[in-house]
Image (cartoon, rainbow, N blue to C red):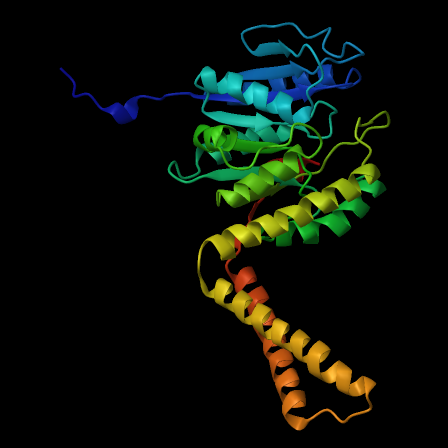
Length: 343
């Protein structure tokens, strides 16, 4: 009788591809078929299902999609938004005990060919650590990476704000919706009682904000998106600049409050020194210096010295705080998939 060796057992991981769909009648069929084609390359390693969420499409985008052993179609009775639809698909997959979750858009901008590398990469990540793996369009300049101008401009202004708000060093392309995670990360993001994930166009941004709050690691894989001749999106990129700016500003204050005011660390001490020194400078200026200037009285040396010293101390402590905050940021890891060389 041969000795039992559990290492000889090959257990296939269950992979869910979640695709929220709204006004994508020109692309959703091609996206689903392309996913099926590339997933077949991993057929010996995984069990997979494509979960399409029909978000009450007015143009019946999903009318040609048929359910099968590899496709699940979920219908929303009313339009819930990309975020709520994605969460609905992930919750369904969690109930069915899936191990890996990939979200991509129905408009075709996320080429499914990256699944061949992305799924094994997530499968090989440490089992007891939390990671979100996302796409980025901007870390390498390639001639055929033709991202619409409006999206480039929005990213140029918003990415630095997002990096500061989230404290992720090296983060780019915060609105990229090509996402991957394992079941542990998905459960914590979906069911944690921390800040809520936005149901509509702020979904990706709010998901990253929750990752930051939970100190989840981030990986970015470089990808070349596809924007065909007839490509269109239901989101007006320029109209989202101000809502995103407000969102990131609010997230920044929340992070500082959570990291430096609720808990105590060196950054807290530096903020206290900055605040107290600035307050002393303002009090001296308005109560001593300004009244004496108005009366054409020379400012005393003691008042001038105290004002200058407190101001310099405030500037130095604030600069040290920014350095400490940057140094304590989570470093985003960049990965490169072989699929990028086929473009």
